[in-house]
Length: 96
Image: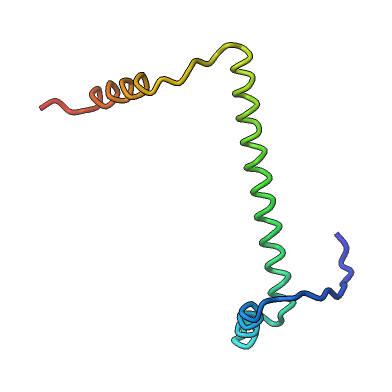
């Protein structure tokens, strides 16, 4: 990553400009550029997390497709799932 600094013009809504000015005027940030740099760092982190989550979902989908191809799945049966849940719940319920 280069440390070269470039000037960039950004257009903001009046509400955003006000928020930036308030943050700088209060001393929370030294400059509007500092706010933009922090916002970009946060944006990059968010994108990285989204990419990781997407990769996880993709892996899950591919695993499901492989299970289907191997015949390791069966049709969804809500009654079967409910009955299994009730059995598990009754196994955990204390005797009275």
